[in-house]
Amino acid sequence: MAGRFGYLDGQKVSKRSRPKKKHDKTKPDPNSSEPLEIVYVRKEILRAVWKEVKQEGGESVSELVDELLSAWLQTRAEMDSEEN
Image 1: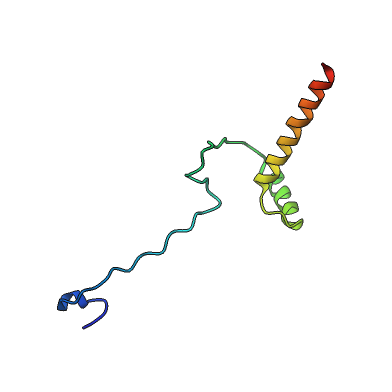
Image 2: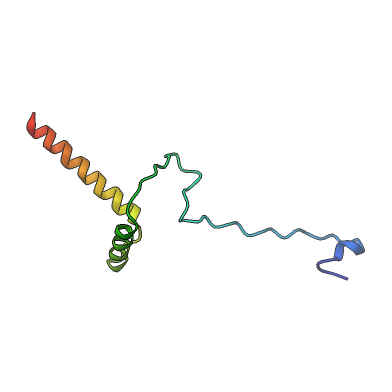
């Protein structure tokens, strides 16, 4: 009897390696060095934005939020430098 129960007949049987689990992109990366912050956004706004991002071929609302917040910070820094 070879195969699955071959070890019962004294045959050397190698263990099958399990496939590696794929990282779930909807959950935070446990290897990330940056901690996550919880942000509350109305569901209807998030859904509307997600719909628009998908229609434009975008992939991530998180990237959009990051870009928008970075642009806001840059604008604030420019306004502060103009005042001084």
